[in-house]
Image (cartoon, rainbow, N blue to C red; front, side, top):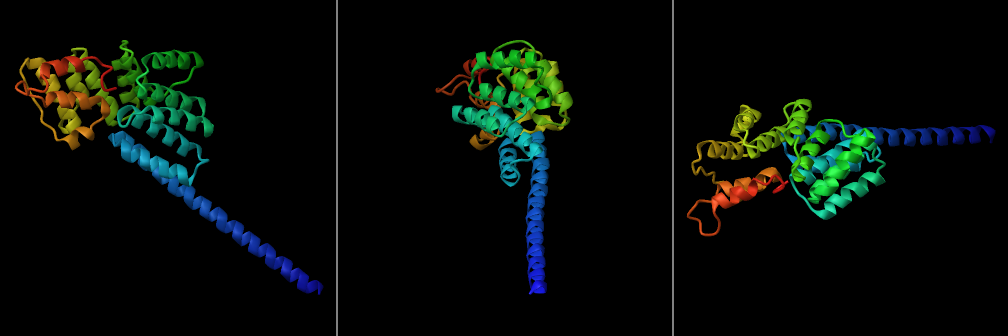
Length: 272
């Protein structure tokens, strides 16, 4: 009887160990898959594919909700999407609330709160947060620098181009800082720096063509136009969509004048 009980206990122990090992193995696979998705998320963010980046980050978060790197990627992808893709008050509030619930660190909270203020077009809050973050010593990194530039433009303050330049220097080969830097120079009438910010390959993308056309129009004083399909405009970063629409309107269009549209777009807060 003693030997039988011993074998039963050994069997139960082996079964428990096997089950524990299977659980650990499954969790490890989920963490590994989430890590790969985080890498892909940052590749998509660098390319400016914000919708895809956000979905990848959400999938990674579902796989490994306690992973610190996954949480950071999700916050940053959500923040950039809020500023340059889809903006709404509900999304803005939801980002900050979710960041709190997931115990985001101070740097992540700085990104979430600033993106939320920009997404809600709340210039006073955005500028107040910049001052608050400076006092707290938080707000470093390329993505925060990008958001700082957007906040300064929203509040129509100086220094936006410098912030976008800082973001571009720290975030190698990233599309969004270069586009916003070129846009900032364009609105300030600095056409040569605007051209230089676009570089080689970026200038022939749809977003680059919008800025190149606007730059050449400003330089030549000629009525240059760029006709884009609605889908192409929707795929642009949100800060370039009004400019793309304005550049597609001809003077004989009875619904809207190109000069009036471009005059409106010269306010940096439009479309941020």
